[in-house]
Length: 433
Image 1 (tube, rainbow, N blue to C red):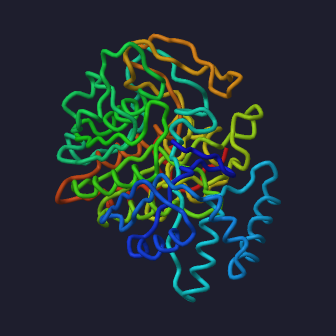
Image 2 (image 1 turned 180 degrees about the horizontal axis):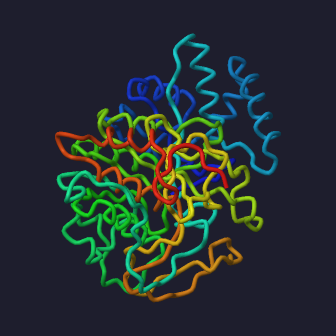
């Protein structure tokens, strides 16, 4: 898999995403530049296509820079990007995209070619180290945390409510039994010899949701691997598929930092548009609020405490930051971040986790840059922190407030964002440390 590290973002260096309507003309341009591809995926729901296994990209960039039609603009872009981010040379893929856009604009004035990278959502792993800016999960024997005390409008909160949960594979914890619908490939084998700490992420988020809405039904789709990594394309296809399930609320506790050109990933933007107006999409804001305090090399250059994360920063997505039990901003929550809609407790939480030996990061790094880990035994419950779990709590509170046929998730959201909730529960608007 060709994963590249650009300025801030990670992306698949051998893939392009394009609007399906523009696929034919892009294919002709690529062939003219002697660029080939090995695979083609198309999503009618997203109205996008993905070309994968690209080859011949460096030669195409050289041709575009030598072309009188595109060369001056592309060379200027190349120099500006390299000058703006010393040590992080602009990728050939970014230059190819820019060169094609310049050529397209010259050929067809006023018609924009919709083309972009396939980014790699990874905020579940993230920088700083995630599930929580406060460190790795730790074993606990305490019961699950009820992190929000809100008024329920039903004696069975969440009854008849459908919640989409796109995350890592789910550890089939007994406390979650009968509350989820998923495929075999969305579940972990509980008997496997060992786990990564990220393997427990979905179970922890699920318990945050169900602590608030114990009668809700979770609809699972795993879009992240055991390292917390994934593809924006795969996540978007899964989101679009979930949009057909008639969901009330969707939880996305993953994301991608702002892209190198500070634009939203087109595939994620297309995906969230698939839901109807009554579905509420909740996403974690990211855990980069204390990035300035990390040792050198622990975070990608360019990420700041105020960096946006997608899909959380998209329009019509409820972005959730974390506060502590006293209502103060958690240090890892992005700030200033006017794009955050709601805050919920995301510190010192107990929830469902793995049962068995787990390779937990110690905070150190091996010479090759991989994290140093130690094996820790968990017995099904962990204490953890992060905006991922604050998002799960907000998702659960919204699900608990839905009364099918009478009170929609959108109605519940309006009540949360237009009321002063008690500190420590669900807090709307700007929160400062």
